[in-house]
Length: 445
Image (cartoon, rainbow, N blue to C red; front, side):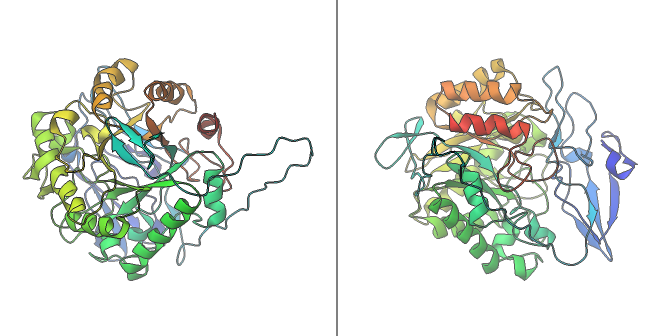
């Protein structure tokens, strides 16, 4: 892997290397799959990159994004699984606490009296449950969730400079709703929610939980359902500063018991139990799916994993009836054994979560037909993340066509202003990038 933006090279097959940055630099999360938890040193933060944690299969080289680059992925022509990262803003110097960006009010007026008025935005979010392989509302009518991922709440708190990256006020939420979607996926941080492992108290525990609750309530009042996604976790005493291959038994069941207790009774909130599992060294094997369902000691992992059955049980133990999303293995791109490995839920209220990008290994219709279509016949299929990082729209348009034909749900990555190709917007007032315009047009159709 080559860290070109830092001027440091490391080939994926070589031994572990370290990159040390001044503590005066703030790093938007790269969430590189081979990244161990950060190790704090005096005056600096050290990133330990470990190729053995998640090797590129089929060979190849990965690149950490530099300025102007987006969410990174490498895919091999032979279908090999690719190592990838969430590309965020590049490092930059900061002084003091992060200053929240000022929300920009929406301009709703039209000058011409003959202009066709915009239809009013909904005032209540859809309440959803599973019926067969569909999501339905409280009346039994079919619900399709289409919307965006709003990143920031998984990393700002753990990095110690805020709760959100960008505004979280009414104007910013109205901007999201103006695209005519009906759902927002909100990533969460385990250690921030639980207030453990050295996360600054200003951004963790009760303060973090209250901030999330206020944002969820605002989204719901604006007519948007919410997917609460456990994005970053860490076992033991480490801060959650990156993606892990699986949830952990140290903290994740407690996290979900608390979240479920907080949001039970609100079926406009959906629980996405774990973002992008990649057990058994990012492979699609019987061992990977065993670990995914049952947890415990798993190949390639140093901690005890919490399996999906354990987490479903944790949610249901609180009396929460919310829909639960379960992402497949290999960063949720693989659903090959999802139906066979699906946990038992006394409410039968489970849906399959799937993540696909143009750089994912499963980037062709033939793969979608073989991987996702069988799962979609047995459970609701929610494409929790989709994107295209080459500046075009042909891939995402084709995938949305495929999902539309199956009345599936999908959410675009990402409603943030990072100056990268996967940004849906250029401003939090909702101005779309060319890439984002593809989704805005689709949601409004």
